[in-house]
Amino acid sequence: MTVRIVLLHATPVAMAPIHAAFNEVWPEAELVNLLDDGLSLDRAREPDLSPAMIGRFVRFGQYAYEMQADGILVTCSAFGPAIDQLAAKLPVPVLKPNEAMFHEAVAQGKNIGMLATFGPAVETMTEEFNDYIAQHNSQATLTTILVADAIDLLKKGDAESHNRLVAARARDLAHCDVIMLAHFSTSRAADAVRQQVSIPVLTAPHAAVKRIKASVLAGHQE
Image (cartoon, rainbow, N blue to C red):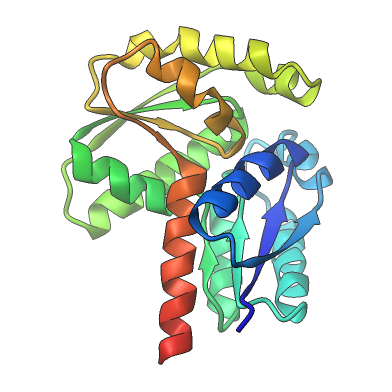
């Protein structure tokens, strides 16, 4: 039985990391990519996620479902409320990019650090983290550092400079129990970050693939 997972991308720089994670964790899955990089461009111009943007994202996800998706994985972390609305409408698993990483982080400590590169995602991710710890009665706290220029370098093809800038801020979070790399695109800096600190460094793609695999296969067994 072929399982189709549709990946919703709002930026092309998220695509390679999630494909690498699927190749390692769940190579049997059939992947379909839907990219609307206008979403991240327009989201960066909005201080808050507008109703119009939410509606646009939900329509994007509904199209993914119409492609016979067995599960949908969103690879951009700036659309949390829109993902919630999409998940409420569809009968298949719809996974936020960071929920599984939050689960792994909180399991390893209460003092959580996060390195982010896309400013509009920080607010929504912080809200999602706070919701997660409230639902799980956790006392965990989150300290976030925004590495503002890194993602622009990555979009220009300079992954080495992106990784260097992200890693350079890792020591500012060395007092934490664990560091999360906020976005799928940031995961390519994992090795560089790990060279700077001795605490665990978590990336979103591998955690997300494990989570959606478990959710989809559990649904097929019911």
